[in-house]
Amino acid sequence: MAEKKGKAKKFLGYCGYGVGAVGLDLSYGMFYSYLNKYLTDVLKLSSSFLLILTPIARIWDGINDPMMGSIVDNGKFKMGKYRPWILIGSFANAVILVLLFNNFFGLSGVGLYIYIAFMYVFWGMSNTLADIPFWSMVPSFTTDPNERSIIATIARTFSGLGQGIVQIGAPILMALVSTSVDTNTGERVYDSRTFMILSVICAAGLIIFSSISVSSVKERHRTPSGEKFSFKKIFAVMKNNDQLIVFMLFAMLSNAGFYMISGVGAYYFDVVVGDSSKQSLFNTFGSVGSILGLAVIPIMMRFTSRRRTYQFSLSLAIAGYIGMLCSAQFAGSITGMSVFYMIAQIGTASMFVSQTVFLADIVDYGEYKMGYRAESVTFSMKGFLQKMAYTLQTIILYAGLSISNYDGDLHSANSQAAHTSISVMMLVLPMIFMALSLIIFSSKFKLHGKQMEEITAAMTEKRKAEEEEGSSASDL
Image 1 (spheres, rainbow, N blue to C red):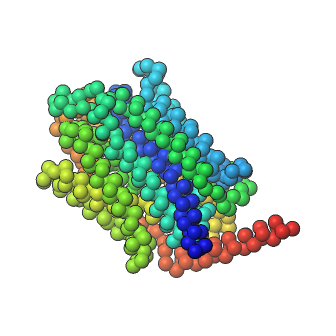
Image 2: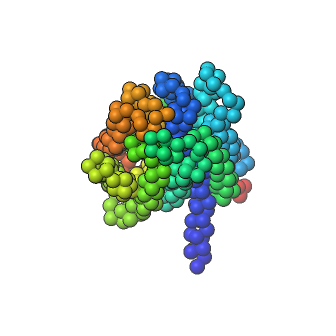
């Protein structure tokens, strides 16, 4: 009985931790799914400017993300080294999200471009403040790979809920509050009022859910690394942890595939379908798939390895994307597209859970090779690769819109070139990125089988020795 209560208490604690992902993904979803639409259609910013801005922001992220990871690793707060940064980052990110999606100062011309550039970079920095410490906590909870899978699944469940709220709710909110219509179809379209209200809702949710998460968990293994930040250390981690490099490559490609659909979706339903409100149905099916996808790992792990489970997840996503393409091109069915998107999202959701666990394994692998842990530095690469994936998606998107002479004022009346360009980005490129990711993972990622068992056993013994040493020191 006591054991059951203990497990129930631990599960509730992990749920409390996972709630924070809802808030983080409200901000993520708003930024990654709708910022492009806001900048091109509402603020009318030049695609050339945006093509320059995103790579520059990523160069800074390449410096800032691992720097923040190292700072977190050396945190000495009474609350721990993770939770204070989650609170600070969440509050900052919420404020900047609202500022990014609202032109409060009535800026135009050069002033508006400068304002957006700063807000764009600051969003990434504040997101890093919250995201790195949040996900870095996963390997600190336990060394058991199965328990890590449970924690990652719980967190990803809440993460999917956050994105689902944005992706399903945004088209519904637009239909309720938008004052702008497509003159060609008479349907309501996204306008400044829609983005203002949505950004405030997401910002409030970010603060609330992050606060709940921080108050629900206690940290373990909180000892600071004692090493000062240096790029030499960052490069050492990258150089000596070859599997981190492999992970970043295949994860970036699969994330880019996911972001292509979430980022291009608003354009696709506005321009190609001619009814933005139908995106809510599409995203509802996707959210159902995300929920179902969380059952893939616990079910398949009973019969096969994590490696094969991950390969199955990517293959399922690819199959779903192929079905979407066929439904759109040969049947013209939004319902058919939505059903296949649900299938793709089953694979994508389980893929994201596995990636979180892989990073925890990579932390152990790095400690096994180098003799010291670099949790936050390693997990900072997760946020960085996501931003790189988004940058890849954004460059392709802005280039496609520019080449096809897309006009945000025309909506469904855009040229055939714009229709074709948006359709290719929505329906063809995601499956290509996923296929490349699957090939690289299958051929280059080595943390599985006996090698991973040896690493796990070594880390478990090391944790026991550290706990015994700590216990002996406290007795003295």
